[in-house]
Amino acid sequence: MRGFPGGLLTTCGLSNFGPACEENGEFYGLHDRISYTPAREVRAVSRWIDDETCTLTVSGTLRQTRIFGPNLRLERTYTARLGENRLCLRDTLTNDGFTPEAAVILYHCNFGFPLVEAGAMVRLNVISTTPRDANAASGADRWREMDEPTVGIAEKCFFHDTQPGADGHVEAGIWNPRLKLGVNLRYAKSQLPHFTQWKMLGAGTYVCGLEPSNAHLAPRTELRADAALPVLEPGESRVFDLEWSVVHEL
Image (cartoon, rainbow, N blue to C red):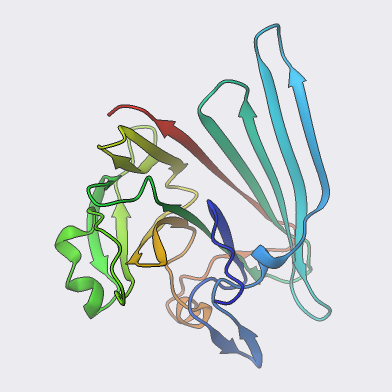
Protein backbone atom coordinates (compact mmCIF):
# COMPACT_ATOMS: atom_id res chain seq x y z
CA MET A 1 0.00 0.00 0.00
CA ARG A 2 2.95 2.38 0.53
CA GLY A 3 3.87 2.00 -3.11
CA PHE A 4 0.43 2.11 -4.73
CA PRO A 5 0.85 4.81 -7.41
CA GLY A 6 -2.83 5.42 -8.13
CA GLY A 7 -3.22 7.63 -11.18
CA LEU A 8 -5.61 7.01 -14.04
CA LEU A 9 -4.35 3.43 -14.34
CA THR A 10 -2.43 1.10 -12.06
CA THR A 11 -1.78 -2.27 -13.69
CA CYS A 12 -2.06 -5.12 -11.17
CA GLY A 13 -0.49 -8.56 -11.67
CA LEU A 14 0.99 -10.55 -13.25
CA SER A 15 1.25 -13.48 -10.83
CA ASN A 16 -1.27 -12.18 -8.29
CA PHE A 17 -3.49 -9.13 -7.93
CA GLY A 18 -5.73 -10.03 -5.03
CA PRO A 19 -4.91 -9.89 -1.31
CA ALA A 20 -1.43 -10.99 -0.27
CA CYS A 21 -0.84 -14.73 0.00
CA GLU A 22 1.91 -17.33 0.14
CA GLU A 23 2.18 -20.35 -2.14
CA ASN A 24 4.99 -22.91 -2.18
CA GLY A 25 7.21 -20.64 -0.11
CA GLU A 26 6.73 -17.63 -2.43
CA PHE A 27 5.11 -14.46 -1.08
CA TYR A 28 2.75 -12.55 -3.36
CA GLY A 29 1.72 -9.04 -2.33
CA LEU A 30 -1.45 -7.11 -3.04
CA HIS A 31 -1.40 -5.85 -6.67
CA ASP A 32 1.93 -7.71 -7.19
CA ARG A 33 4.95 -6.24 -9.00
CA ILE A 34 4.19 -5.19 -12.56
CA SER A 35 3.31 -1.57 -11.68
CA TYR A 36 6.80 -1.20 -10.12
CA THR A 37 8.59 -2.56 -13.16
CA PRO A 38 10.32 -0.08 -15.50
CA ALA A 39 9.52 -0.48 -19.18
CA ARG A 40 12.25 -1.12 -21.74
CA GLU A 41 12.35 -0.34 -25.45
CA VAL A 42 10.10 2.66 -24.81
CA ARG A 43 9.33 4.63 -27.93
CA ALA A 44 7.00 7.42 -29.00
CA VAL A 45 5.87 7.85 -32.61
CA SER A 46 3.69 10.46 -34.30
CA ARG A 47 2.56 9.66 -37.82
CA TRP A 48 0.48 11.76 -40.19
CA ILE A 49 -1.83 9.47 -42.14
CA ASP A 50 -3.18 12.30 -44.27
CA ASP A 51 -3.45 16.10 -44.10
CA GLU A 52 -5.91 15.95 -41.17
CA THR A 53 -5.15 12.72 -39.29
CA CYS A 54 -2.20 12.26 -36.95
CA THR A 55 -1.76 9.09 -34.86
CA LEU A 56 0.22 9.28 -31.60
CA THR A 57 1.68 6.04 -30.21
CA VAL A 58 3.71 5.25 -27.09
CA SER A 59 4.86 1.67 -26.49
CA GLY A 60 7.21 -0.35 -24.35
CA THR A 61 7.98 -3.80 -22.99
CA LEU A 62 7.86 -4.94 -19.36
CA ARG A 63 9.14 -8.26 -18.06
CA GLN A 64 8.18 -9.89 -14.76
CA THR A 65 10.74 -12.61 -14.16
CA ARG A 66 13.35 -14.06 -11.84
CA ILE A 67 15.74 -17.00 -11.90
CA PHE A 68 13.96 -20.30 -11.18
CA GLY A 69 10.66 -18.48 -11.67
CA PRO A 70 8.17 -17.26 -14.26
CA ASN A 71 9.19 -15.25 -17.31
CA LEU A 72 6.19 -13.13 -18.31
CA ARG A 73 6.46 -10.38 -20.94
CA LEU A 74 3.95 -7.54 -21.25
CA GLU A 75 4.05 -5.49 -24.45
CA ARG A 76 1.99 -2.31 -24.06
CA THR A 77 0.92 0.26 -26.64
CA TYR A 78 -1.06 3.46 -26.06
CA THR A 79 -2.63 5.04 -29.15
CA ALA A 80 -4.51 8.29 -29.69
CA ARG A 81 -5.50 10.40 -32.65
CA LEU A 82 -4.92 14.14 -32.62
CA GLY A 83 -8.18 15.96 -31.86
CA GLU A 84 -10.12 12.88 -30.69
CA ASN A 85 -11.45 12.29 -27.16
CA ARG A 86 -10.20 8.68 -26.96
CA LEU A 87 -7.12 6.95 -25.56
CA CYS A 88 -6.60 3.29 -26.47
CA LEU A 89 -4.45 0.66 -24.79
CA ARG A 90 -3.41 -2.74 -26.14
CA ASP A 91 -1.51 -5.22 -23.97
CA THR A 92 -0.03 -8.48 -25.21
CA LEU A 93 0.88 -10.80 -22.33
CA THR A 94 3.21 -13.71 -23.21
CA ASN A 95 4.72 -16.59 -21.29
CA ASP A 96 8.35 -16.67 -22.44
CA GLY A 97 9.17 -19.49 -20.04
CA PHE A 98 9.14 -23.25 -20.56
CA THR A 99 6.45 -24.22 -18.03
CA PRO A 100 2.80 -23.15 -17.65
CA GLU A 101 2.47 -20.01 -15.52
CA ALA A 102 -0.33 -18.18 -13.78
CA ALA A 103 -0.99 -14.90 -15.60
CA VAL A 104 -3.52 -12.56 -14.03
CA ILE A 105 -4.11 -8.90 -14.84
CA LEU A 106 -6.38 -6.23 -13.40
CA TYR A 107 -6.75 -2.70 -14.78
CA HIS A 108 -7.17 -0.47 -11.71
CA CYS A 109 -8.74 2.60 -13.40
CA ASN A 110 -9.06 5.40 -10.84
CA PHE A 111 -11.20 8.54 -11.00
CA GLY A 112 -11.34 11.36 -8.47
CA PHE A 113 -12.31 14.99 -7.88
CA PRO A 114 -13.62 17.05 -9.61
CA LEU A 115 -15.25 14.35 -11.74
CA VAL A 116 -16.09 12.37 -8.60
CA GLU A 117 -18.14 14.48 -6.20
CA ALA A 118 -21.55 14.33 -4.52
CA GLY A 119 -24.12 13.66 -7.22
CA ALA A 120 -21.80 11.88 -9.65
CA MET A 121 -22.96 8.45 -10.76
CA VAL A 122 -21.38 5.23 -11.99
CA ARG A 123 -22.77 4.17 -15.35
CA LEU A 124 -22.66 0.39 -15.80
CA ASN A 125 -25.15 -2.21 -17.00
CA VAL A 126 -25.02 -5.17 -14.64
CA ILE A 127 -26.58 -8.61 -14.45
CA SER A 128 -25.91 -8.89 -10.72
CA THR A 129 -23.88 -7.21 -7.97
CA THR A 130 -22.17 -8.87 -5.00
CA PRO A 131 -20.80 -6.80 -2.10
CA ARG A 132 -17.34 -7.91 -0.98
CA ASP A 133 -18.14 -7.85 2.75
CA ALA A 134 -20.61 -6.65 5.38
CA ASN A 135 -19.41 -3.07 5.10
CA ALA A 136 -20.07 -3.03 1.36
CA ALA A 137 -23.41 -4.78 1.87
CA SER A 138 -24.55 -1.86 4.04
CA GLY A 139 -24.29 0.40 0.99
CA ALA A 140 -25.17 -2.05 -1.77
CA ASP A 141 -28.35 -0.20 -2.76
CA ARG A 142 -26.30 2.96 -3.48
CA TRP A 143 -23.27 1.51 -5.25
CA ARG A 144 -23.78 3.87 -8.20
CA GLU A 145 -23.96 7.07 -6.13
CA MET A 146 -21.06 9.28 -5.05
CA ASP A 147 -21.21 11.30 -1.78
CA GLU A 148 -19.11 14.05 -0.21
CA PRO A 149 -15.73 13.06 1.27
CA THR A 150 -16.15 11.73 4.80
CA VAL A 151 -13.48 11.48 7.49
CA GLY A 152 -12.91 7.93 8.71
CA ILE A 153 -15.14 6.17 6.19
CA ALA A 154 -14.04 2.69 5.04
CA GLU A 155 -13.78 1.55 1.44
CA LYS A 156 -16.57 -0.45 -0.18
CA CYS A 157 -15.93 -2.96 -2.95
CA PHE A 158 -18.54 -4.46 -5.24
CA PHE A 159 -18.17 -7.34 -7.70
CA HIS A 160 -20.34 -6.76 -10.79
CA ASP A 161 -21.34 -9.30 -13.39
CA THR A 162 -21.42 -6.86 -16.30
CA GLN A 163 -23.86 -6.87 -19.20
CA PRO A 164 -22.05 -6.39 -22.52
CA GLY A 165 -23.64 -4.82 -25.57
CA ALA A 166 -24.50 -6.64 -28.78
CA ASP A 167 -20.87 -6.33 -29.90
CA GLY A 168 -19.61 -8.06 -26.75
CA HIS A 169 -18.12 -4.90 -25.26
CA VAL A 170 -18.76 -3.51 -21.79
CA GLU A 171 -19.27 0.23 -21.31
CA ALA A 172 -18.39 1.49 -17.81
CA GLY A 173 -18.07 5.09 -16.72
CA ILE A 174 -18.74 7.95 -14.34
CA TRP A 175 -21.06 10.87 -15.13
CA ASN A 176 -21.06 14.21 -13.31
CA PRO A 177 -24.38 16.00 -14.01
CA ARG A 178 -23.21 19.31 -12.52
CA LEU A 179 -20.22 19.49 -14.84
CA LYS A 180 -22.06 17.74 -17.67
CA LEU A 181 -18.88 15.73 -18.03
CA GLY A 182 -18.02 12.07 -17.81
CA VAL A 183 -15.52 9.38 -18.66
CA ASN A 184 -16.19 6.07 -20.33
CA LEU A 185 -14.20 2.83 -20.26
CA ARG A 186 -14.80 0.27 -23.02
CA TYR A 187 -13.44 -3.28 -23.26
CA ALA A 188 -14.37 -6.77 -24.47
CA LYS A 189 -15.93 -8.98 -21.81
CA SER A 190 -14.43 -12.04 -23.50
CA GLN A 191 -10.97 -10.65 -22.64
CA LEU A 192 -11.82 -9.32 -19.16
CA PRO A 193 -14.85 -11.18 -17.80
CA HIS A 194 -14.63 -9.87 -14.21
CA PHE A 195 -15.25 -6.38 -12.82
CA THR A 196 -14.62 -4.79 -9.41
CA GLN A 197 -15.80 -1.37 -8.28
CA TRP A 198 -13.70 0.33 -5.60
CA LYS A 199 -15.75 3.01 -3.85
CA MET A 200 -13.49 4.95 -1.47
CA LEU A 201 -15.10 8.23 -0.44
CA GLY A 202 -12.84 9.08 2.49
CA ALA A 203 -11.42 12.55 3.06
CA GLY A 204 -7.89 12.50 1.66
CA THR A 205 -8.43 9.28 -0.28
CA TYR A 206 -11.43 10.16 -2.44
CA VAL A 207 -11.71 7.91 -5.47
CA CYS A 208 -13.87 5.52 -7.41
CA GLY A 209 -12.03 2.69 -9.15
CA LEU A 210 -13.45 0.76 -12.11
CA GLU A 211 -11.43 -2.43 -12.46
CA PRO A 212 -11.92 -5.01 -15.23
CA SER A 213 -9.79 -8.14 -14.88
CA ASN A 214 -9.27 -11.62 -16.31
CA ALA A 215 -10.02 -13.31 -12.97
CA HIS A 216 -12.04 -12.68 -9.83
CA LEU A 217 -10.38 -10.39 -7.26
CA ALA A 218 -9.02 -13.06 -4.91
CA PRO A 219 -5.60 -14.42 -3.86
CA ARG A 220 -4.02 -16.76 -6.41
CA THR A 221 -4.23 -19.58 -3.86
CA GLU A 222 -8.01 -19.20 -3.73
CA LEU A 223 -8.28 -18.93 -7.52
CA ARG A 224 -6.18 -22.07 -7.94
CA ALA A 225 -8.30 -23.97 -5.43
CA ASP A 226 -11.43 -22.96 -7.37
CA ALA A 227 -9.85 -23.91 -10.75
CA ALA A 228 -10.26 -20.23 -11.74
CA LEU A 229 -6.60 -19.18 -12.07
CA PRO A 230 -5.73 -18.08 -15.65
CA VAL A 231 -2.66 -19.92 -16.94
CA LEU A 232 -0.49 -19.30 -19.99
CA GLU A 233 1.19 -22.25 -21.64
CA PRO A 234 4.83 -21.85 -22.78
CA GLY A 235 4.91 -19.42 -25.69
CA GLU A 236 1.21 -18.57 -25.36
CA SER A 237 0.00 -14.95 -25.59
CA ARG A 238 -3.23 -13.15 -24.72
CA VAL A 239 -4.33 -9.71 -25.83
CA PHE A 240 -6.25 -7.14 -23.77
CA ASP A 241 -7.75 -3.92 -25.17
CA LEU A 242 -9.12 -0.93 -23.28
CA GLU A 243 -10.42 2.43 -24.46
CA TRP A 244 -11.01 5.55 -22.38
CA SER A 245 -13.08 8.45 -23.71
CA VAL A 246 -14.36 11.79 -22.45
CA VAL A 247 -18.16 12.19 -22.50
CA HIS A 248 -19.83 15.60 -22.75
CA GLU A 249 -23.46 14.51 -22.87
CA LEU A 250 -25.57 11.47 -22.03
